[in-house]
View (tube, rainbow, N blue to C red):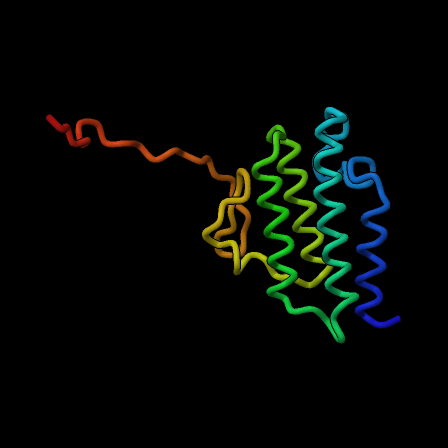
Length: 145
């Protein structure tokens, strides 16, 4: 089996498994998550894997890393904007990183300045961050008479 076929097989298996049952060791607290949130996370991750499989099947050799990253980033953005609690978002982000590893896509270099949920990559390490909304300056607004 070629490396390309092996990756397609891994991605296909990922789509078939129950994410919460198979990967609950990542974040044990999410195992008993709300069914609606589990469904949202599973749908986003399944769609991500489906698009990655498509890229591999359409490429003559291997797809461009930039195309793989674009698909994973898009789905991470979907997770960011989905109605999910913190634990389920974190769980979903970790599985996106898992998909990146399976496709040999190195995300840390591309996400050094991008916040994905509640953590970011600094010096090839994942660090927890707290997002702070920028303060607006009081009294700086112009008044018109």
